[in-house]
Image (cartoon, rainbow, N blue to C red):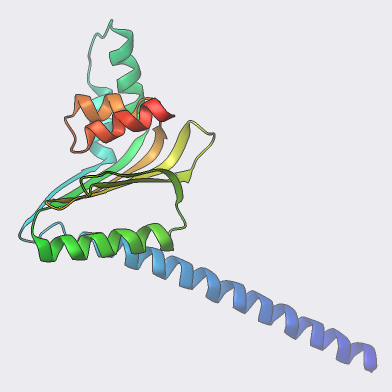
Length: 189
């Protein structure tokens, strides 16, 4: 009788543990989706320039029938094929800058991204690179860049298998905002 009571208590404890784990997972997923939605609002907002490129375009680019003899161009195409999503938001409206800066700080903290590089310029310009680890030190799952100065605020999120040693070349090739900062990242890596 005592053993059955102990077994029932253990069973209840296991069920409680599973319930707690399930609730924790739901909270994590919910907060991640809320943070992603924080940036969604900027897509249609007045005073914000936004670029949203998804995996379908990268896939289309990689399937183009190009005869590329240049090794660097071939490597670029291979890297593009590994990307899943790029989002860019930039604004010079002071009110929107404050919102974007707040959302960027919240996103970096809530997603537990790791700092890669942080630059505080004498001119007030702040550049922050954060990442989500990938399969090795050179390939990361997400690269998040936030640039804030007196005149403009910029957020760039790149997801996929991001090769840190080649990201500066990609930014320069596509003339992405912040390409100078990406080149600094490449040199420091």
